[in-house]
Image 1 (cartoon, rainbow, N blue to C red):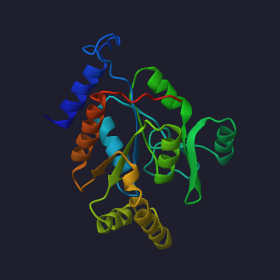
Image 2: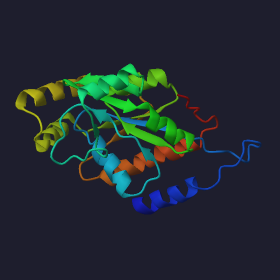
Image 3: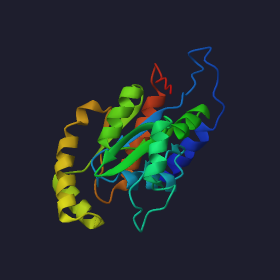
Length: 224
């Protein structure tokens, strides 16, 4: 089965009416909240973009940031680009699920987007850095956390250089940070190796994790 067929089949199944929780034979599939994390340059954006292309049935929560938009990025799709003043206002009004300053720029997950998706009965997924993942897991212990790993540090170096978005000093800092972040792997629920030119394999792994979560005897109860 191709990944597109797999996603379309999952989409159809998740649109079916969820039965009441009266019997062990009528089990509702409660919506889950997934965080996809990992070192900078590991391919988190690429995995989520491919999932969107394949029509995988999730609500993709867009992270907000105060950093400048890169030429190939789309506002509201890759990131929500906001001013520092706007971001600080959202912090003050408690409108962010988590936020952190990373490499001199603010990043945060809008709380409303996650709450609205779960209220619709739809699974939500967001990509966050390691700091953000730790913050969300403290706030929502039942979140499903996935760590995206490179095949090796050497491969991560190649990917970061190919992006051509960092200076030599920034690249060195990101690599040093990546080595520290990888040590946080044991605090995650799942790990996926994102191998070069095998993006659909990583997508299949994400879908397999979601499918497994739907089969839990005791579903994760997400509350915000």
